[in-house]
Amino acid sequence: MRLLLDTHAFLWWVFADGKLPDRARAAIGDDANEVLVSAVTAWEIATKYRLGKLPEARVVADDIAKAIAGERFGELPLSVRHAQRAGALGGSHRDPFDRMLIAQALVDDLALVSNETIFDMYGVRRVW
Image 1 (cartoon, rainbow, N blue to C red):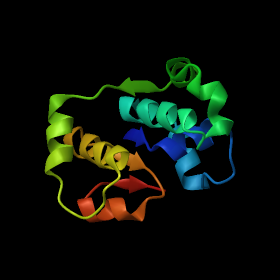
Image 2: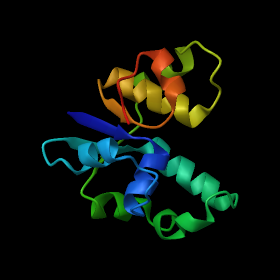
Image 3: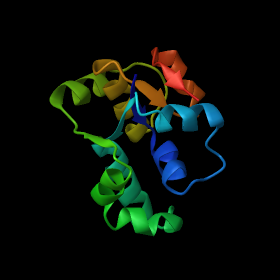
Image 4: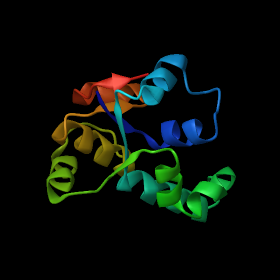
């Protein structure tokens, strides 16, 4: 299975946070699965760290690519197709980071590892 980590799932994995449920932890840790972290997650971490909303993420925010590589996850770049799909998504959910992750999951047929139940209304396969 190909997995895309939501920002909180990535951070909780890196910091071995107990908020990450066993099912998600098992899927991420399964060597048979390809685990990806989006450029959108890097943008969100850097932005929220700069704004003081994620002070605990300093070690990750200082070098997000290194943190991704250190976990042996792949990077998922943002494409025009992703951006177009995100812009065309209906619904009332306004978070631009979430909308882009939803679009990437749909365009690239990825299961999104996230606790965000609102993602279900967009037809995203979600692991949690």
